Amino acid sequence: MILDRLRTWIIGVVNKMINQSTIKEALGVDVSVSDEMIAALRTWCRMYKNEAEWLGGSTRSLNLAATIASEIARAVTIEMKVEVTGGSRGQFLMEQLKKQLPKMRQMVEYGVAKGGLIMKPYVVGKEILVDFVQADQFFPVVFDTSGNITSCVFSDQRIVGKRFYTRLEMHDLQKDRCIVTNRVFVSDNRNSIGRPAPLTEVDVWSDLEPEATIQGVTKPLYSYFRYPAANTIDSSSPLGVSCFSRAVELIKQADIIWSNLLWEFESGQRALYVDVLAFGKTKDGKPILPDKRLYRTIESGSPEGEFFEAWSPDFREASILSGLEATLRKVEFACGLAYGTISDPNSIEKTATEIVSSKQRSYATIVDTQKALQKALEDLIEAMDVWVTIEGLAPKGKYDTKYEFDDSVVVDKEAQMSSDMRMVTAAIMGKVEFRMRNLGEDEETAKKKLAMIAEEQPEDPYADEGSRF
Image 1 (cartoon, helix red, strand yellow):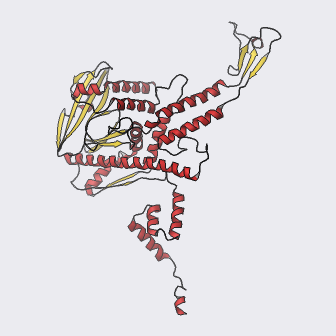
Image 2 (tube, helix red, strand yellow; image 1 turned 30 degrees about the vertical axis):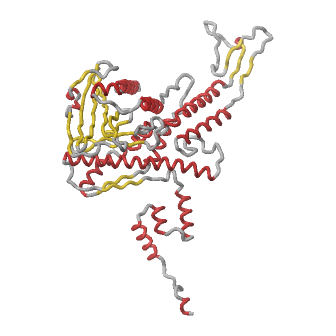
Image 3 (tube, one colour; image 1 turned 90 degrees about the horizontal axis):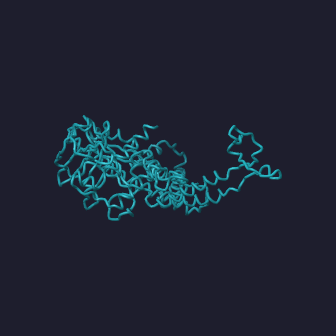
């Protein structure tokens, strides 16, 4: 536990070395991120790590930031399926991608919490690995007219002995080529990036080239997953914002109310104030209490004084809980989640219209995030395909991708199926459409299944009786 805390502290210290001025000094380029966005990103990161600035002392945390990010990531990726097909090329890409899919939920959580995530493939031997770079570890330099990051700096930190090593890797896309630059810096001072150093001083970087030009590249060799919410921090920035960016103050209020509730229970514990003469004493004259939590001492001052007095105050937890639930519902609304996601779903009565509206809000949030993730995965696979060609890892050829996202988290499948069955009975919906919508079949499969069912039906011996009369 102590080693884990020390490692976390050291990583935090090293990350603080890298900022706009550091990039400018080391590489001679300006980072295209406003001061407002940098400050907001720091706030989101601290909230996600349960280290918000308002915590400490008597203010406890509900850990809402991480809970919200985790819930969205779970709903987005649950039973997510990605398939790459198309000969040897598609098979090789699928084999490489399959290694990354198990960690996708965790990476998506980082992305929705901090507003974005870069997935950067690289080649090791005969396989392709993916480096997941969180929003506080990359620095956009240039955006194109569509808001895509075409030039970006990535930071990688290592601690060797008592030295702090920092590698800055810059990707600069220029027309039909990409220039990749690696620069290493070493410092004995944790507050400075230090002086330039060769790549060979760190074993894991020894095979990298200081600069390489990759010809025939028209898109970045990485993909950017952007959380699909409007940027209210800096509307001119193409960067994404945290899933809880609009609920920062509400989350702070929720933590304060929660802390008040804890204090209500702590300060209102039953106690017996008993005359100090009722207890024995230690050698230094202090009373010996059988239960320090329950008993408190008083000195009556006279033989006629009260021997003991019970302290059992009334609790105000009902009113505090009501305020907390109201605040949590405001947090859910601000984050685009259905009521009951983090609040008590039974705390208020809702009309059928309110329930539908609440579910639609959550559904829209999850679906939009799934679309953003799919776009990022498509760009990731395309970047992987470029590396396959460069390194000659698989025969040339085209590939196809297919994505499936389970929406059962936000859609009541049973209610949907019952409604669709009524529509089929009323001849408003066809059976093929019903199977495609509710059973996940494509049109060809649905038609085959219906044909098989029709063949299995027994013949009606009276089907033609009406024609005889």
